[in-house]
Each structure stands twice: as structure tokens, then as C-alpha cells.
Amino acid sequence: MNILETIVAQKKKEVESRQAAVSRAELEKRELFKRPVLSLRSFLLDPEKTGIIAEFKRKSPSKGMINATADVVAVTSAYATYGASGLSVLTDEPFFGGSAEDLMQARVNQVPILRKDFMVDEYQLTEARAMGADVILLIAACLTPKEVKQLAAAAKKLQLEVLLEIHNEEELQHICDEVDMVGVNNRNLKTFEVDINTSLQLINAIPASKPAVAESGISSVDTIVTLRNAGFKGFLIGENFMKQPDPSIAFADFVQQLKAKK
Ligand SMILES: O=C(O)c1ccccc1NCC(=O)[C@H](O)[C@H](O)COP(=O)(O)O
Image (cartoon, rainbow, N blue to C red; front, side, top):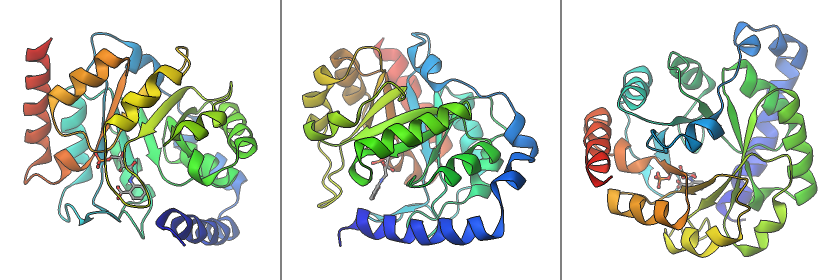
């Protein structure tokens, strides 16, 4: 089994046990379930904003522990204050050290929040809404085109936006009307190598109506400029900030450098 298959197998078990403990009807009664959502798509299309989706990521399968001590409210609030167009919060516990609690705490911020997890079941969409997320991620590598369409349609019924993640040309087949944005992950999930050319090679095949997001391995403002010139509207960045002793300061410096490039 590759890492994605391992994660998905674990995810299916987890979802089954959470569903047995808390029904969808119960999740729908939660306060955060009723809040109006913020549109990441609109934030990414705003030329005054940075386009950066800053990720709160404690650890990962490729890097192991990245930051064991960062405080989710302090870091995500700094990201929002210094110009993130969106926040991405990992809610997977076993592989990324995240939690629903992290996302609920990050909800103090008035910027769109992506629930970063491996979505395999509609139950997780209701959970996402109930924890205060605005956007969910669907990963083409672990879903069929039919499953993407079904999950994306169910997300729209909950007013959630959908970011579809692809890794190669074949996965362009997963793009459907129901997805709002298309992400290209530069990380090869078999070798963990990151290559920005993955984004640059796929951008022209992504429909102009779906803002494109370059994901993973971004660590310089020059890379953002290159990706932006190629047509990307969003830039998902995790490790580059989280690995610093103070991710908040690292993010503020990065945005200052980016603004100087304009
Ligand atoms: O990050 C990993 O090691 C990883 C392994 C297996 C599946 C997914 C993985 N990452 C998810 C992501 O998409 C990244 O967290 C996100 O794009 C940010 O990447 P980075 O800026 O390189 O931290």
C-alpha cells in the first residue's frame, strides 16, 4: 500500500466509528453549522489580496514532526492579520497531528478556512460544516470522478466550497461543474518529491472559470511570482512557515517581500 492508500484505509475506519458516536442530525444542531460561510474563491480572485492559503501543519508523512509547540490561535491569527487569503487547517490526527479542535479554534479568524483532510464520506462534509470550515478538499488520487461529483454536490448543499486536488493530466478528468477551484499538488505522493513544474505543466488545462491553486513545496516569493504569471490565483503553503521557530514572523516577512515584488 502507498501512503495515500494507508491514510484512506485508516480514514474509512475513523469515519465509521465517529459516525456511530455522533449522528449527522446532532452535528447539524451545532452553533457553527449555522454560520454563513466565507468564499475562498472570492478571496482568491481579489487582486488586492496575496492569494496565499497558509496552512497550520504540525507534522507530515514526508517530514515527520515540523512544529510540536505552535499555538493554533496565535499562528492562524497572525496569518490572517498579515494577509493570508485563506487558512488551511489539518484535521487528520494520526498522520498530520491535527484535529477538529484546531479548526474550531482557528475559526476566531474572519478569513475562509479549508478543512484539510482526506474526504471519503459525506459524513465528513457535515463534520466540516459543524466545525466551522468554509471549504473542503477532494483529492482526485483517492476518489473516482463519480465520487468527486457526488461529494462535491453534497458539499454544495451544505454551502461549502470545493477545492479539487489533482497531481497529473489524467486527474483532469475529475474536474466537474460542482468543484469551485482546482489545486495542483506539486508533491508526488509516492516519492514525496516536490516539483513546481507539476503546476506549471497543468495550468493551461485547468478551466479559466475555476481559480487554480498551486500546492506544496513553495518556499520563495519568486516562485509565487512565477506561478502567478502562469495563471495561478492561490498558493497553499504549510511547511515553509511552520518549520520556523516563529511561523507568525516568518509569514509576515514573506508577505512583506511579496508586496515589494508587485
Ligand atoms: O505533506 C505531506 O507529507 C503529505 C503526505 C501525504 C499526503 C499529503 C501530504 N501533504 C498534504 C498537502 O497537500 C500539504 O500539506 C500542502 O500542500 C502544503 O504543503 P507544504 O507547503 O509543502 O507543507
